[in-house]
Image (cartoon, rainbow, N blue to C red):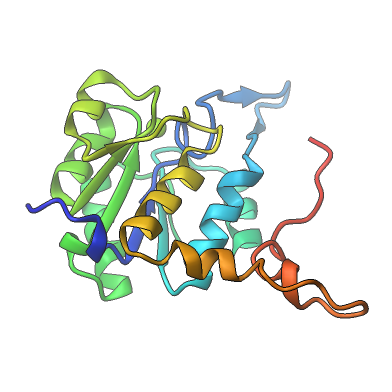
Length: 193
Ligand SMILES: [Mg+2]
């Protein structure tokens, strides 16, 4: 598999340790909560607004991820995945994208088969060493701390499209409208956490 960032069209993401810092928080009733990073949300939003596809593949099941992805407009969620490579293939097929044009961002050993099969494997900074070794790009940020946002910027810069992302924030907002600076950030609402 040739590792080429410039042809990537589908961004596949793991959840625990990639979109989160890996913490699995359970309350007294056993309900799981997750903490997501707004920078990653913006990265996903930018990628989608520029025409990219996003799929999320996670070995766990839970509503928190589903709620967050609904906020971000991500429709391709594979939760409770027992075979990430199988689900990677399904996501690629659903999006009409060849595996060579898929980037997968992972952090731990269950991600390795999907990373080895995709066109552009990415590891977060605090990924397992084997995952870092398998990656074409390792982010400076750890999981849950903007690593996905960084991966998106890396892909867009490689594809000479980063200026297109910046252009979304170039014009001054017009009073009484949602135009201008809100274009890329409109999916993000202020959060107290
Ligand atoms: Mg993980």
